[in-house]
Image 1 (cartoon, rainbow, N blue to C red):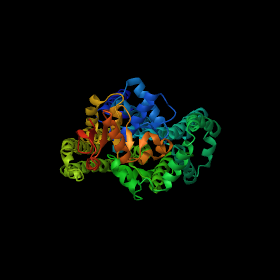
Image 2: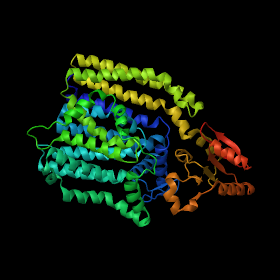
Image 3: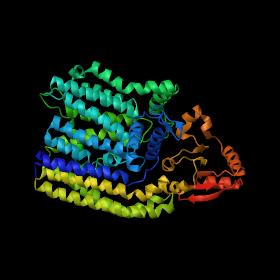
Image 4: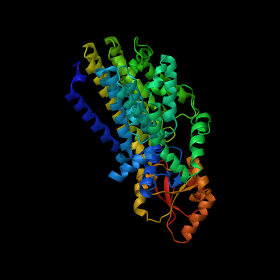
Length: 553
């Protein structure tokens, strides 16, 4: 059982089971706002309108991010129809692709066993697995950056032929171009900065002669440039907003109210790398060591990748959890290269820590219901989630204990595999059990109740709020009332697409009523009470713990 990595039959069987489970669970949950609803709706509107250049959300120009995710989701809808698993398919494939990429790169650069461990590590790390099941830009960006990183490692490794070096560097350049189309300039800025720092740290100036700069830049601009040119021609306001506001101002200013402490991402890394937290410090120290006699230092490259990207986003004034996702493939490769030669004691430490984490989870389960402080009525949903979290904690505890047994018996491949399975299954249990809570957050039940009452021309308003997922389930846009937030830029270009004040909404609502035209509106309890005080004619059509739907007739 110490040579699992050499069995092709075993590896292909494991990959098949992993891929089937990974893709199957994409459809077991509702699209949870804000990200999942937003990117599913943008793709639905692109698919419905046939406009693949100008990206829109709720019918309003939306240029915060490039279009790769929207393109791929819209393509999925074109092939398979609208649905939840379809909305997550691109993200799921990116997560799966990242696992395969680190496995292949690890095999080519560090050896067969390290490649096997790298795939197991990334494919079971809590944060990577969770983000791979969520329709968000972070996994799309991370996969493209992983392709660039993996290709760079393979191209620059000692012993690479001139042909391998050229071809893999072109793959690297293509990965960076797709990263730009996934989320913007960070797709090239981050790898570029890592390369500069690595040159200094590893004293490897010769790497710049091996980058295929001319061919690479030509390929990069051929892939990344066309959309930016076309969208700029159709929408002259887009370049300034995207390149200046969404990059420099977003990074330096705090207007997005997403700032956090300098250690924000360090706090996310610890739970995010579970079940491998017990070997993370050792792997990082091992990555700093220089391999004597080698020109290229892949571990130092990976360490610089991790440190710089973490520092970059820690310094930024805009912080969201998914920003740190691109460092996990580098961590997986570092952990894998360390695990290959780790002592039995260090394997026991890693497995033992997983046992302790599982026990801590068991102890925390009874406290979950106290999370519903702001919405006490949601206690029942958290109670429904408790058995799933309990099962995840049991799996983590049992998996860690079994891995300890394998480590003691010097079955290193089986010990690593057991920890990986425990980590992967635990995350899937937690995510699946979130469905009752996620469905309520999404407002899916209300949207489905609205559908029978809607005609093609029924006006729908969203007063003082925007429900990111409900528009997707309604399969149509709504008219915003007294709501700006992420639509501010788009509404400045097309103010006629929204109603800026509640009084303006009331006037239009009353006009619908006088004309005998049925209208519906989505709002929260406070707004409902304000409208009631104004004597607005309305009745509650449906409601849940977070919002309600009213109609005038």
